[in-house]
Image (cartoon, rainbow, N blue to C red; front, side, top):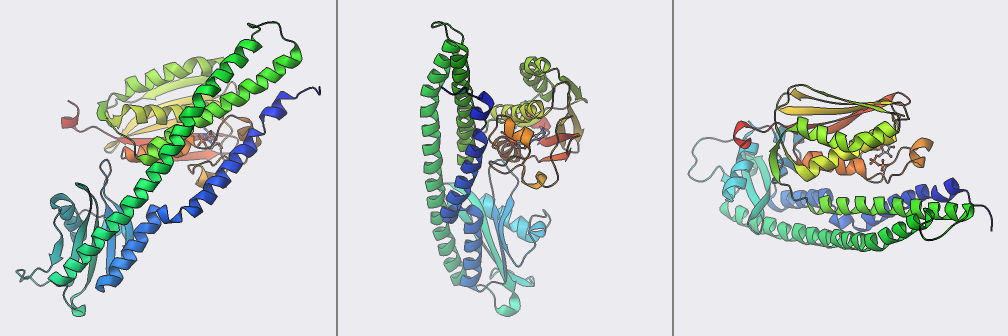
Length: 399
Ligand code: ADP
C-alpha cells in the first residue's frame, strides 16, 4: 500500500466547502420565490399599482427588533423609519391596534397634502408588518372602497408569505433532522477510530496509525460542519430567544475560562479588559454562540505566541464588545463578504484550518436578533478586531 500523506488526505475538505457554497447558491436561485426581500418588493409594486398610489413602504415588525423597512416605492428607506415621521407613527399605530388607516378620513377637516392608506399584515394573531401607500391629493382621495380593495390584497399577500415561510421551515427542519441523525453514527465512528489509534483494541503499526488519524480528523470536521448546520437551521427558522438581563463581565469571564486551556496550550496570551459594565439585555444561548464563534476564530487565525484581547465598554445605550487579535488578518477584498454564509478568505492558512464559513454568519444573525450590530476592522498580516454591540438592559428589565 502507498504511504499516506495525512495532510494531503485531510485537506481536500476545502473543496468540499467550496462545493457546498456553490450548491447553496444554486439552490437559492431555485428557491428564488422563497426569498423574502424579493417577495416584499413584488408585494410593494403590486399594491402601488392596484390602488394607483405614488409612494409606499412595507414595514416589518419583528418581536425582538426595531421595526425595519422591508420594501419601498419612491421613498427613502432612511426617512421612513424616522420616529417623528407621520408615516412611521401611523404604521406603528396600525401595528398596535390592528386597524387599517385611511387618511384624510371623512370626518377629518384639517387639510392634508396627501391621501394615505395603511393596512396590517396579520398571520394568526400576530401583526408582522404594515403596508403603507400614499399619493398627492390632486390624484384624488382614497375612498373606503379603495381601502377594502387594499385590505383584500394585503390579506392575500399574507397567505403568500405564510406559505413561503412554511416551505422554508420544512426545508430547514429536514436539514436539521438529517444532520442530527448523522451525528450519532459519526460520533461512534470517531470513538472507535480513537480507541484503535490509542492501541486500546490491539497493537497497530505506523501506517495504520496514519490511516486512523485521517478517519478521525475527517469525521471530526464533518461533525463540526453538522453542528454548524444544526445551529444555522435553528436561527433560520427563527430562534427562540429567552431575553434576560445578563451580567456581561461574569459571562465573558466564564466563556474565556473554558477557552483558556486551549489558548494557552498554543502559547497565546488572552486578556480581558472591562470598564464598569451595566447588565445587557440578551439571551444566553445566543450570547454563548456569538462569543464562542468569535473567540474560536481569534484562536484559530492567530499564530502561536500571538495575543487576544477581549474588551467591553459602554457606548450610548449599548455595550460595545471587541475581540482583537494579532493574527493573520483579512485582506480588504475578502472583508465585504466575510459575514456571508459559507464564505472563507482565499488564504492558504485559512484553508488549512478547520472551518466551514458559517460561524460569522450565525454570529451576525444572532447579534441582529438581539438588537445590536456587528463589524470588523482588519489588516492583512497584522490582526483583526471583531466587535458587536448589545442593548443595555433598562432599569425595569433588570429585575
Ligand atoms: P470558519 O469556519 O471558516 O472559521 P467563519 O464564518 O467563522 O468560518 O469565518 C469566516 C472567515 O472569516 C474565515 O474562514 C476566515 O477567512 C475569516 N476570519 C474570521 N475570523 C477571523 C480572524 N479572527 N482573523 C482572520 N480571519 C478571520
